[in-house]
Amino acid sequence: MAILIDPPRPEAHGRRWSHLVSDTSLDELHRFARSVGIPERGFEGDHYDIPEERYASVVAAGARPTPARELLRALQASGLRMQKRRGDKGVARVRGIQFADGTTADVDLIRSDREADEPRVFAAMAFVQDDIGDFAVVFSVRRGQWGSPGGWREPGESVRENAVREIREETGLVVAGDALRPRGYERFHGRSAGGLWQEGRDLLQVFQVRVPGRRPDLTSALDDTSDRRWMTWAELERECSDQFWWALAAAVLSPRGG
Image (cartoon, rainbow, N blue to C red):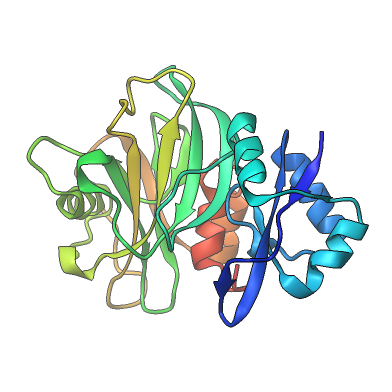
């Protein structure tokens, strides 16, 4: 096991940066980052960005100086590399998620203010908030969990139409498609394909939307949810922080500026 760092070359925000990776384990990478005081916001899904002025101290703490191409090869060989578009931010990779239909997957959580590639999107969900910032959540009978409204995309439906329909069916709230704000996506891969996702149709689009008023009434036209209610951020965190998608919610929504 080794922690690797390449020379500070890429420029952004008026500084040069290095990439810090593990050749084995993200847990190992996070432990090392904490030990040298690298903030969580520097994590990009498979590496930490290290400013040039921190390079020498990180090497002194035990990171192995490694040419950029060799570092990339090591990251690819480890299976930890997270594919994403330029400008998107990797938040976390959650391994071995078991779903209610019996399938399993590894899931990458990626923050992005751009919509995902539409042909690859099989489902959509939305964080729905009212005027004071509370969240409309529903209890899924199939999953036995609280969460935001969302579900599978129907034939002929755009991704935004998918989200608008799910919000209406599960909460009774009506939102306009152009009011939906892209906040990120979940990418499913590895393990057993099928059920929730297929190869090449492996993304779940995440939106955020506001509805007018304070805690408008919630209803449902379907029986796949057994309850629905408004929650504060603290209540949402208490009910949902053990779910695989929580790291993305915290990254884009936390009032603490996650």
